[in-house]
Image (tube, rainbow, N blue to C red; front, side, top):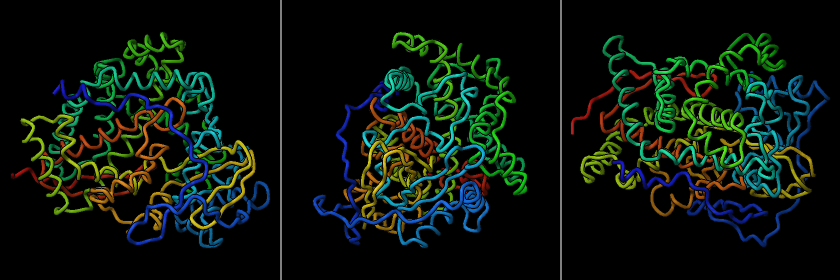
Length: 510
């Protein structure tokens, strides 16, 4: 297993790729929805429709509709598309007053216009990771961490290089550690089911995700450190203090809008929690910090970037993605489960009973099922970029003039559920990405802040752990279907992703 794991190639930056400045357009053809129209054809120009309303009042109005309107977040955007008959519109994005200085954006709400946000020759990414506002650097040790840097900044390349190293230097341990930690998770789920008839998947996943990341990538078990088992709780609270202006916790509307969306929660309230996390990473990540020093990164800056990458980006991603994947597969039913179980067990059996990269490569349905979850409910729904120059942004049908300095915003679920690209876009179709037709659709899966067909480089903002995330999700399905023929879940909502309760696990019978 260790030899096979050494072949994992999710960590090396790809060569810088060329930039396509005119966005390709998906055809409406039912037989080939993802093919492009001739790039020489010029689309008619149209003024970006929509308005921002009166200062302050317009932004607060849009914020209330976004959080508390009858259609929810999706309905907020869909209503504007219908009202203006356009997938490129002007609107205010939360949080607005009095957290964000300027909430005005040009929203890109289809698969054709959305990719302009990946082109760092056209858009600036400085301090836009969380959108129209940036959390205090007091929450990140006083540093602007990598996620907030534009690729043009001198620290961007060495810090992203450090993250590639973090992902690669213990790559032989990724598969065995995942199997060990998530094997324990399934044991805990079985115990809960036997004891009370149901199991909270999210609670167990939080503990497993943090344990796996620290053991797999750093070689340290946080439960055996001064952190104990507090890591997930501390991280969740810390993330809340950063993202509270963008979240709804189900509090009374006036209370929630005042406390979360109109004010910033004081960083001092989580300083002790953050310091505990930082102390753990100073010790546990010494080898990675040493590598950062060789790259010219100050040791403390390396510590806080490693903490952010593993706790906010990686743990936060697994906290959202893995329950989402379990939710959609649980809803898919026993027939889909049977196909996945047959594929997983056959591939493992054909590879000497071991889970290896070679065995994973022989599970195309598993990979497609993961891509489909990333398409239908991407873990990061929003991307931002500020126009570096005057430009024309194209939807499927029109070109829209955008001025230098305007904020562009993309709501990814509307891009990845664009009916001009995907048939049955609102349905979870686990085999959607199989075969040649499925492979052509992959460039429209953009959860990583770039197309799935591209590899992250030092010169873009695509997720450094793109392939690592897909690998982890595939490993989850392998562990699940090696052990069980089928399973059932109940699904609720939560501030971050979905709340999933497992109600049955049917053990493997073949």
